[in-house]
Length: 409
Ligand code: MN
Image 1 (spheres, rainbow, N blue to C red):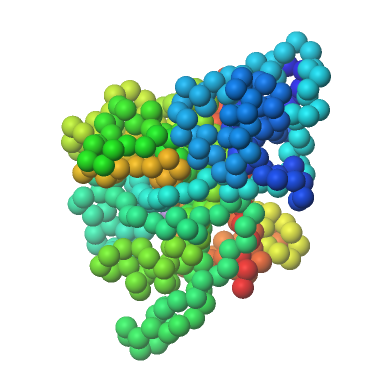
Image 2 (cartoon, protein in one colour; image 1 turned 45 degrees about the vertical axis):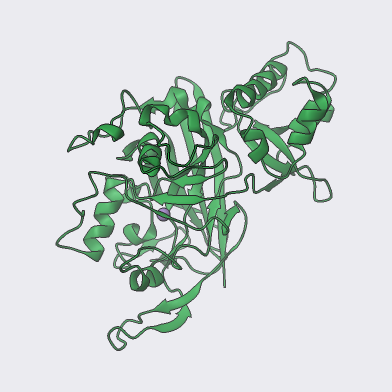
């Protein structure tokens, strides 16, 4: 390869994730593929004739979201990745390299998708058990949990790209020591993150027609990191009986690069044993989980010192993406290109692998100490929360970069 890619880069030649970027503030948005410290400008590559049909592809890649490109289907999206790979693997630096390559450092990353629908699952048995213990000590895991991937319909309008500040939500909360069941209107005092991965729907399905579990991969374009910001005090008061609402829908952040499902194949692993055995429509053959390392950090505004607060892994998820999608559509619900389906908080088995502050600080009872000496039970104004994800095996590295967001007053 004529372009040098740092060995530790998330964006190796095996990854080639898609995103939307502006090379500078005054340049227009266009689609790109990340490679090392650079971005392949797909609109420029189309103009140079890398994919044939110059005008068609230039028009596709000059759009501000990837939806129309993704909707062309995997034969086309995989071909574009293959062509870019071939171009990067030319024996010598091609003459058009200066027009096509842009530095990643100075690029402005944009929201890569128009998200028609967003669904949030609850697929980590460790997370569901931990939260259950705090909310219902005598009955942590409800009887349906091992039979189906529990989920709810979230809000698509407030999904933002990494780097977008998050405004602390206000709402109804029950103040401790107040009159029982008498809420006040106030800023959330228990603002939390949720460490999640989300998959992007790449192919629409027809209303009334379920997607079989072994067909799911054909409908999944790729995967992003997902921070499902949550206000626990608002959530606790409002969630009965219909579930999450304003404690959740004020914002969720995604990483800007969509890692194609194809790039994750080498990292497939078997999921945890499922007991009881799932019903027939949820039974999948072979490995259907992924081994992807996850890391979460807090950087307080003052001092700018980062503390890693959790290390988890997607391999712990009880319900796989394929099972989530099969379950979501088993009643005939249709999916649309750009839909996001998030895993739910991904907690591991040990306290240092929990995927939310609710669990890490055990409902606020065990404050965390940060490197600067300050402590946290939940997020404070000025805190920057970052999540990173990467898979590594036999010298192959495929990473997601990061999703970060700062909390504002
Ligand atoms: Mn969530």
